[in-house]
Length: 264
Image 1 (cartoon, rainbow, N blue to C red):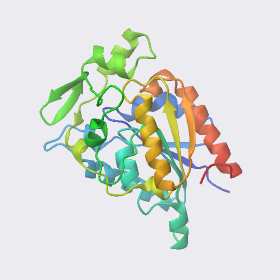
Image 2 (image 1 turned 45 degrees about the horizontal axis):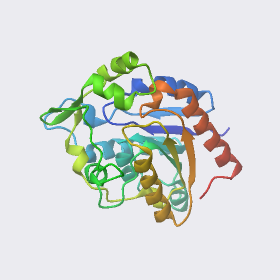
Image 3 (image 1 turned 180 degrees about the vertical axis):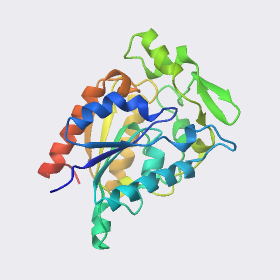
């Protein structure tokens, strides 16, 4: 009997796996096995963890899932695109099959997530000017090796689809995140080799639409053609505001994969 595919979510910065519980519940109803990790860059340690630590974590979990002979849909939210894009190297199912290995990644999904070019970092990508200049995050609070959140300002930027008081409560739960990971450049672009979809989040104030479109342009340029793009009417932290609707889009992507209709 064929095993259900796994949706492996690489979470965003300053989040814990529990933040995605509602999204997990809705995804599981689509016949997918949900899997995620706690990034090492949100762990309180000295020295603070780096992007390499998160990449190593993603690769370890990918190896375990492949050993179970799983088809993997690898999905990234926000900063999670950095360790996902780097960590997917060598785990594409088609490449593993050629080597006689089990399991592998069949598709990538970015949801309001960074898809940097090789040589770019999270910091350098965000420093590129948009219509109103580079991104400015006034909700971030310095904590030496880490960055934290001002709950009031974070609510207005990351949870703006929710009533403000609810957004503030969510923002208060966000952990510190290591600064060290933001300046490390990408060395491998998995989206160039693995079929990819992008979910644009329409009311995102953290990664506005022009920023997301640049990430889509990067992927399409690398792949030499269009990818499937879906729109979600939510804010940056979709898992708090519109988890059901996000899961529905994932289900649509799965249906296209099963029917062979997704852009390769």
